[in-house]
Amino acid sequence: MPTLFLQTSLFFLGTIVGSFLGVLIHRYKKNESGIIFGRSHCNYCQKKLAAKDLVPLASFILLKGRSRCCNKKIGKEYFFLEIITGILFGLLWIIFPDAPTFIFFTIITTIMIAIAWYDGLFQEIPDIFSITGILAALIGNLLLQKIQINEIGIGALIGFLFFKMQHVISKGKWIGEGDIFLGIFMGIFLGWKNLLVALFFAYMTGAIIGLILLLQKKAHGKTAIAFGPFLMAGTIFAMFFGDVIVHWYGNTL
Image 1 (tube, one colour):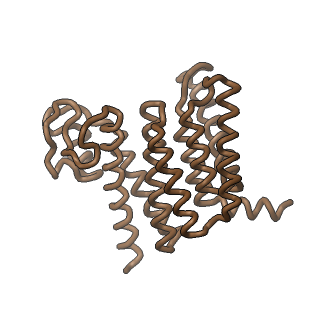
Image 2 (cartoon, rainbow, N blue to C red):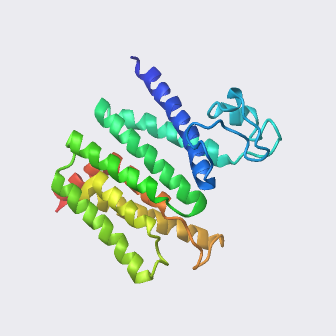
């Protein structure tokens, strides 16, 4: 199969998955029935949407970011969710062109995007998302044997203790309980070495973004900023580049 065709196909597959995640996230938050198989509807007038209104990326562009039925603005987060998911699906095959690894990482990436987007929108992380990630990461790593079992165990322990201590010391002011499950998920998926890479990237990125917001006066010292997106971005970064960084760091010592 020609590379360009494959990459394009994976990109569009990612946009479809991203579109589904957008629906799933909002239905879960609103506790709507038919979370997975229910018909899509307008969030404003509740009218059922036609298939032509559900084409990832294209529908948003052609409708100029507005609902066809009531002309209300559609949140741009849907568009960005679709395009980011599409890009990541394409990148995964470029960097991991092995089918079992690609499938495993695609599943994990989908879960991470859902966690990041949910936390970014609502500043909370449903335990079901993190627990699903924990189970998927554990099963995938055990089947593919990409990480030694002791590294998985140490990673899970470090992830748990790192966030549990912050939660206890701050009495829940720094991080929420959802971040504790997130730490376990990250540790099981990455192993302890790449977990450290992910945490370093997440905290550095979070500090830089926080500083920028403070300088622009868009936030102040007590402004609550969702940290889940930074943690998931760090995990994705470590998934792509963690082994290279760990190897480089080991050779420099």
